[in-house]
Structures are given as structure tokens and as C-alpha cells.
Length: 350
Image 1 (cartoon, rainbow, N blue to C red):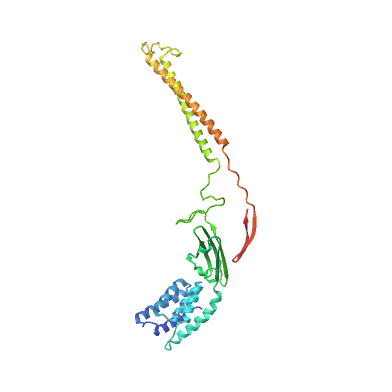
Image 2: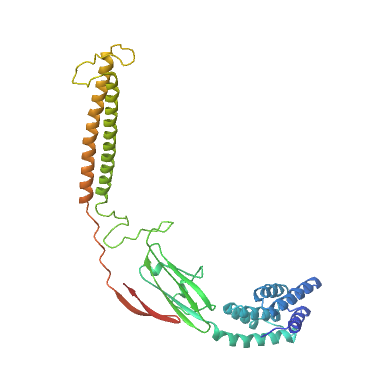
């Protein structure tokens, strides 16, 4: 199946020199362009650059529409591992209608294509896709990102060797597997539909988990009580801190008052001592203001201590009595053997 530039040029030259009944007349410009494309394709093919060579051969084929050039494209597709497309290209050569005036190279190309098709066909692997589970009858099946016809589900279908992605999807469930298929292999893939964990974008229904839940996540037991306890502890702590601040302020004011009075304040007795600076009497109004400020701050401090104590006590009680989540029941361990395409092993839950 190796091509040489001489043989390839000969095949294209035969095509360019002929004007078969099904083809349009070929002018000199088209002949030169097709020959140049073919020569470039031969060079690339010889370097193992089959993808680039295929582009050149297919463009030349579009210009001359001859079985000899199609044969080159088919062989290049085969090199690329695109066996399905190569088989179709060989088959298209075998069914071409060639008139009596066509060159012998055309009939030789048809015969060669038939032989190479017969040799290639047994190498083409097949896949049989099956979908199981709820919604299998409406599932959209994808093979390598393309919709797989429902008429082919459960039917052996030719495909190229290599790694393939198989997916099935419904509004409520889905499945996907990757499998490697080798030449001549008859692969079988079973897609087990499983419920989706959440609503798919586009309007799929929420799948209800066991127990009749509509899909709303349940809060852990006691979560609301814990939240209230945290709030209560926060309020109690803040009130206690505020009480300490007010008490400290009251003592600071008392110290200021005693600076003006040379004896300790006792009850409602007015302060009549003289000022330390200029021996003038201290105003009774100043004394009254000091006392009112001290009393007010002391009262507020007491209230804050009461609120703080209640808050801290209530928060601690709520936190300690909040229900705790029960530990999940361990899943019973199980192990079972499995056999896959070209592989085997064990699987289970623990």
C-alpha cells in the first residue's frame, strides 16, 4: 500500500488525460492544479503526514473526479485509522460507472479498490449500545459528541478503532462511559441511567431523593437552636463588656469629684469645701452633677451586668442542650466482580 511519487503521478496523469462521461471537461489550468496537489500529497504521504496528504488528495479528487485519485484518498484514510471512512471511499470507487473509453488505469483502480475493501472490512470494529434504567426509551444517546440514531441502539454499528465517549441523557437521569475499541473487536456498551444530583439547566425536573424529599436540603438537627445560642452568647458578652466600661467610667467620675471635695461623698450631703486652687467654695451644683452622673452610670452598669448574665447563661444552656446529628449508619460492605471490554476486576462499596 506504499505510494511512490512515480506511481502516484502516473495514476493522476491517467485521470487528467481522460475525460470520463460523468466528469466535466478539464482545461489546462485544472490539470496543472490537480497535478500539483497530487505531487504535494505524495510528498506528505511519504513523510508520514497523512492528515495533510489527505487534504491534498481530496482537493485533487474534487478537481478530476477519477477512481485513481479516490484510491489515493482511501488509502490515506486507512493510514489515519479512519477505517469506516476508508471503506466507504473504497466502496464509492467500486460502484463508479466507467464507460468504454475510460483508460485502463480507471478499471485497474476499481479492481484494486474492491480487493482492498475486502481486506479492510474484517478489521473494522463494531459497537452495540444499550441503555437501561428509568427513561431509557426517551434518552438521547451521544457517541463522541454526536447524536447516535435511536434506530442503531442495540444494533452492531461499525466505528473506528480508538477511545470513544458514550453518553445518554434524559431530563432526570444520565450516564456516560469511556471505552477503548481495537480493530476487529465487537464491543458492547451498557449505559445505566442514574438520577441526576440536581436540576439540569434548561428545565429538568428535580429528582426526589429516598424518603419523599422534594430536593430541598435538610438542615442538621438543632441548627436553629445553635444559631440562637450563638446570638445570645454574643449579646450577653457585649452587655457584660458595656457594664464593665460604665462601671469604670463611674469610678473615674467619682475620682474627679473627690478632687474638688476634700472629704468622701456621703449620701446627699452637699460639698461645701473650698477649691484647691483659689480657696473659693465649690458650687453645690457641680457636686450634684457629679453625683447624678455617677449614679446614672452605676445603674446602667448594673443593668448591663444583668443582661449580660442572662444572655451568657441562656446561650450556654441552649448550646449544651441542642440536638446533635446522629452518625450515619455504615454502609454494608459488598464486593462483586466485573468484566469490561478488554479488562476485568472487582468493584464494591465499603
